Length: 282
Length: 120
Ligand code: SF4
Ligand code: FES
Image (cartoon, rainbow over all chains, first blue to last red):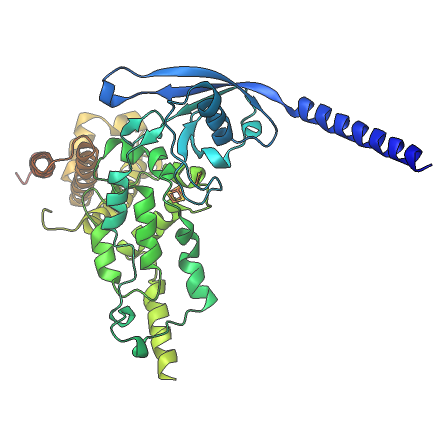
């Protein structure tokens, strides 16, 4: 009796495994991966290499690239780290649109040929790896930290607590989600034509700290972006906000900051500052 | 202009743009037969146009149109040229060129308005 039950069980398991395998097989397909290849150090002109890669419903473009690198050509240069849209290092142009390779499923592109190119507006180091030096320089120029003398940790015992209401946080929270992936920078037509233009990421950060009511440097932040090649060179194409994988809306931040610069918008931050001050008195 | 901040220049740019729209609209609407009391084509005849110039209110309208459009247009040109190249020599050159060209155009246009008005 026991033997009979075991035979029945193993048959069910076998059927289950077969079903699973055929399910996987039906999900599996082969795509053509076109990878941009260039090594500026060798001085050769760029070209595309084509790879046939098996993919499944859940395969990301990064998975496909790593398959090609692992089994077909280990010289492909790719930059990645977290594989979960957190580190911002795997940005590339995928079928013409700047995206994170780890956050883009092959199935969502819905095409048999997937073309991977380096991000536009960045100098190429090799293949899909680009140089972010200028991008980070623009970010640094925005002084992306809180300016507030009370925030300096001089004496640990006299540390100040900055109380913010949920509304105060809401003003800048969205912009603080930026992972510095550079997708917005690569999609921006103004960055493409004006090398001194800080780009949407840096300007969104300028807005992020401007809108933070813990920050004291309201005027100096406006002065940083109020230059010949600063915030006014944005043409409001809006492509930065479209490509951002983290839901940041740099175009909105830029427009809000511009509104403050021409005094068309009421200064929420000053209002918040005075409110905080009056709360402090109570 | 050299001393102005970019935000101040842009404020002037926006205001001159909106104001230019208004004066151009008045300039066009003033030609309507209901206003001039004559057919549209006749209102554009030489004598009628000169007569318009001699009307002081109309001359002021033309002058403001000239100034507003020159400011808006030349600043627009400055912005376009700034995007071509990024170095101090080019940037200062563009600023000086657009400023001088704007002043020259306003001066020449004002001269025409004054002569047609009979004041020149
Ligand atoms: S704003 Fe968005 S697209 Fe731009 S760098 Fe930050 S996360 Fe990336
Ligand atoms: S690998 Fe970190 S964002 Fe893609």
